[in-house]
Length: 307
Image 1 (cartoon, rainbow, N blue to C red):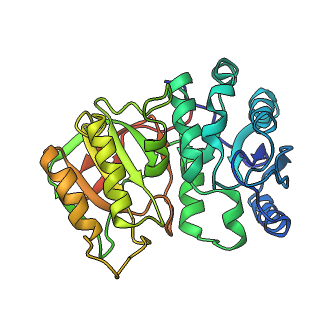
Image 2 (cartoon, rainbow, N blue to C red):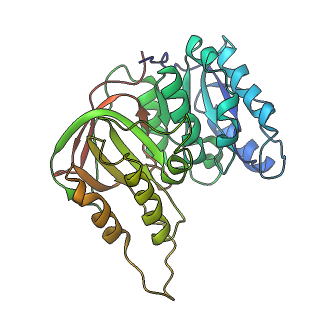
């Protein structure tokens, strides 16, 4: 495992757009807020670009990643937003360059593709956490304060406890392992490729938004058939409250689908942590050792993600 250097006030951070574009007004507003956090900001060439539903050509977005990792003045790299685009560039990235220049790398949603590929191809701890464009309309303090505790704090971040009204235990018990995961749609889209997620003896976390129940069922079933669920030591399903509810046909609840698919596995599992497409969006350092207590619905970090 490789851990990046922690972030300090006054450091220079890079902002890139490796997936979909963002309106200029939202970009300017978000960057101004981020600068007030106390960091110098350097923008990648893809920030503000539009190339169909992408923020630049594949090679342009890859070059931004390479430039930010190779620049000795950059301490951390933040993604502007998700959307779509990272699966297109996974086989174009120079992972040796990243391994030789380890840095903080933050994002989620479509950025799951990069978080997983970078971690598995280089050993670098990556950070599943909030993105810059959200500052324009989702200035949620717990999301950002938690992120910066992970990126700057010399001690291990306090455990996460799932205390929302929708949270529940699927299978009780305690498990430990390296935490991996991210957006369900992205995890499924890389199955059968060199970048599919390795869940062997890991703690797997899954999040998603805007999907119908049957779609969540299909994707979880695909992960199960691929052996990705039963090989994990434990599973955390994060908040999926913003699902599309089709009331014009027979349906299941998310809870019924999760119980049907995950309970027979017999491994510790619970639902409801505020990670991903929700507020707050709590940060997860991908690759660190954690303890999952599904009975009490707690995720505890056993080490930090930085040095």
